[in-house]
Image 1 (cartoon, rainbow, N blue to C red):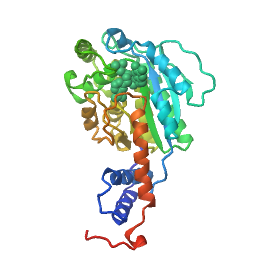
Image 2 (image 1 turned 135 degrees about the horizontal axis):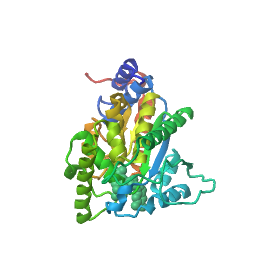
Image 3 (image 1 turned 180 degrees about the horizontal axis):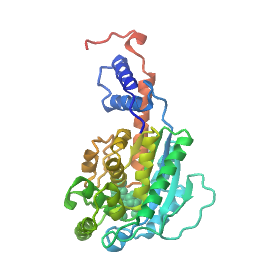
Image 4 (image 1 turned 45 degrees about the vertical axis):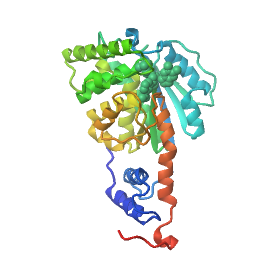
Length: 348
Ligand SMILES: O=C(O)c1ccc[n+]([C@@H]2O[C@H](COP(=O)([O-])O)[C@@H](O)[C@H]2O)c1
Ligand SMILES: Cc1cc2nc[nH]c2cc1C
């Protein structure tokens, strides 16, 4: 794992104290610039060239009625991504971020799109969605490994293209059930505090979703789940395994990662529990409306940049935070120092 560069970090801190503003007046933006300096090994980090990979997959637990939408929507949204009509399609265009959609296990059939200008589709399903995690392991060890490696490959592809920020997103009906189960298992939180409304379920379905998560945790514990990998196999998802591999490979390549919402944070938790050094490479874009997201972020010691009441996924929150993060770096790079501008520095 690449280490943080303390010299670059300190030099960036020093530069922040010399720029023409009262120290601390740019708040979190100052911390973000210093954070990137430490990771890039450069006191004045370059402009960010970001890539988004949205991993899509289905979940057997959808059969339990834990989502407000039918499982077919996962495949339908993949088509929507390729036609440029999804929120992330719009935000990727707006902010000029490259967009890849990776099918790691979409169950329903969908047409292979003609050459899309909105994104690239990588069709590599491991299987037709996971099994119902309430009654059996979501994945086999081999399926989990395959999905993880697809994520690794996506991050390595980003590295080859010279990307210096990697953003993972997801699409998968019922994946907030899987993510909630993982967060409970890896933080010892109670399902009542973590299970949320996902796409917008009603109170009765919410009570049932809590019970589904409780049953899954009990089943997996009885099956001997201990490690982060065990939990991922038992109650995770194919897109969550791909995201965990994506984050781990990004960290290993020394490329910072910008998290999205609830599900991507659950995947990051798996990656960090499996290899704590991954945590140094993660930034949180936003606090999702999904109950339990703030707790999951706190377990990773992350503070979100935005708090807009989002609960969409698809990497939309990360795409929205990117211009602010980019501005933090541009300010750090382009502002004049007190000496350069002939402005009197205040007492420190
Ligand atoms: O990222 C989030 O914070 C988030 C919160 C709630 C829902 N989602 C999205 O909604 C889908 C999962 O919701 P559900 O109700 O089907 O479990 C999945 O496609 C996610 O991208 C995403
Ligand atoms: C329409 C729709 C779009 C989504 N994008 C991410 N998750 C989603 C879930 C639904 C239901």
